[in-house]
Image (cartoon, rainbow over all chains, first blue to last red; front, side, top):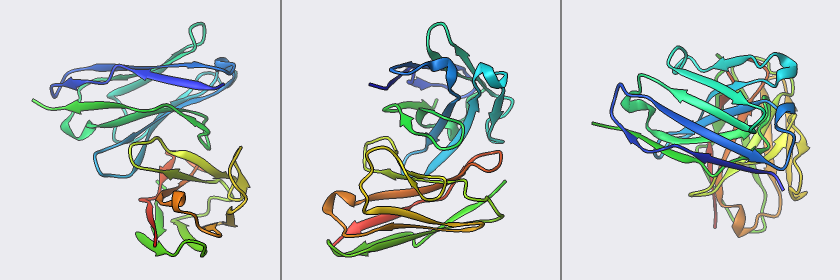
Length: 118
Length: 107
């Protein structure tokens, strides 16, 4: 059974940093790209970025709204994807989802809430 | 950035009837479109990819069509559990982008 379990979301002040982790099981993690998507309260889905598999050089892509502040990485030995969020802004407040894939996203975790507020 | 525009914003359809949801891309995206269903408090669920291929375990009453810039998700014989917000997403170009969603209400 495919499972994605996310952790790390909580209340943080503007300008601070936070790292989210997404631990997966049930498939060969290293063979897949991993994506991050967020959803602000009462809003739609916003693609944040992704990291490709090692086969594709582990390359990353980011949305313009987070580029230069957020970094996605992966540890294939532990089957974990990370979203490092720096210089957080109030508009980064959202539920963050990790998901499998680089095109369509076929498995998603339950989401974790990140609240950026003073 | 490719802008995805969904219509209508809200759709109310009777149980047992058919619902048709539209998604338009601001430029051609071939058939690289996915559709997701999201219920309150839940993560999105993949329904359709490559514009018309049903994902694993998705009922046959869900179907997708279109290519280029115009796409449609059709849900035939609506059931109460189909009440949700539906999103389209393009993956032909970077950044990936989602539509703003269509809220489907079952009468």
